[in-house]
Amino acid sequence: MDIKEIKKLLKPYGLKLTLPRLKVIEIFLSNDRAVTTGELLRIMEETFDRVTVYQTLKSFEDMGIIHRIVGAANASNFALSSIFKKNPELLFKQHLHFSCIKCQGVFCLDDKSIPTVTLPSIYEVHSLNMVIVGICDRCKK
Ligand SMILES: [Zn+2]
Ligand SMILES: [Zn+2]
Image (cartoon, protein in one colour):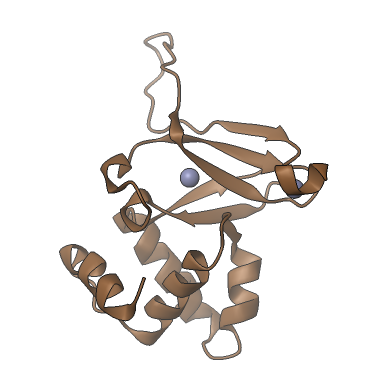
């Protein structure tokens, strides 16, 4: 995905493509798994201050450009939402995640939707996270 395409995707959100935003999206695009806040900071801190990184993540999360996943190791992981992936029709759809106990990798299972859960009416559901914990393909070898 080149800069032109990224710009086009951000346009509907009313976001200008600033340098930190571009860098963050490039980091996400170059990973096949979710990225932790720590990993992002390590790469970004060479060029940008922490506040900028946190602000960029927050605005992306608020707008649904990225989503947060809490993995087995409890770190906050972020992944790009489907708009940047091969199946844009899956946009905003909640999906299952896989968390590897060996490499701590967290992966989006975009095509696996979360089963419907019926709760007693005393609960008001805002979101539903489902993480499958196990060993990923790379760690099995
Ligand atoms: Zn693994
Ligand atoms: Zn995901």
